[in-house]
Length: 419
Image (cartoon, rainbow, N blue to C red; front, side, top):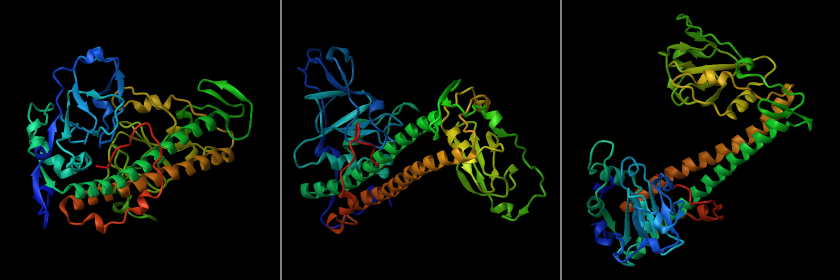
């Protein structure tokens, strides 16, 4: 059942957003040209999924020729498709000036009295059912549809007493902060991996003197083969009679979809069957991304290139080295051509290759841990948001102390809220 069709239970009723909020309007007497600097939030500065504070740019007042006026405490709602559907919105809790300006593609809403907690509205608008309801009422031409102000003001919203609004907002905010912490930890782990790759692929682990190469400094004993020189030619076995192996029926093999290189399920209808082989690296010609696969699988479509490491090259090292490349685009389905011509830093021994892999794999496990924890928190966010809004559970039934036991890591801006 959709949130907006729910029975809110005893003591609760539906109201309209416009009963407690109004669209913020610029004072007629305001002359922005008299202000040396004004905070400005472009659409790209308002995160998808929502954030408490966009990444403002300070602009001279006379340099802002158009925009949407807002004040501290406002909820900024992206109104153009697909910004609204993707949850582009912000809550202005802090502002380095009395007011600010944002893209014309947002609607600023402010509470009309202290009875209304803007955090409650901010989280409510992130509910998928709410976004779907509003998106169905957009107006305008295809591809340029916008949310009219009256649709937001007429939007049904649970009418809760101030104390209960605050309690609900506090509970969801606790989860929001936990998600922010995991996001920040994952971002820092990714930064750590990038720094580790730069150091490992230029200095190695043997304290060797360096030499200059076409890809920059590397240890003297290392080679710099092209990708084409580091991988083996690979041929598919198209024999239709290949239906069984030690791994079971063909239909029990997972298929890898070339679009996202995800394991899409199991199939006996793949275009090409790959028989058991050493670990394989998959390169997506559309995505320019890599996937390491160490089990039998089937490819379901063209545009995906299997790469086998040559003798003397550790497959996992090859994978990590490939992931460090910035593969240029050469047009539709020609990315592999560009990739094959790129050079790789290559230690002379597999022992050093594997030692480097061990370091990078450890960081990858940390990245994956934070990603998985955030996934769990995202699902909890959705469930908690729905049940608190409908009154299915009450804040007094919750114990979120485990989520608020530590400080939230500092970031440049508040990371995205789950949606």
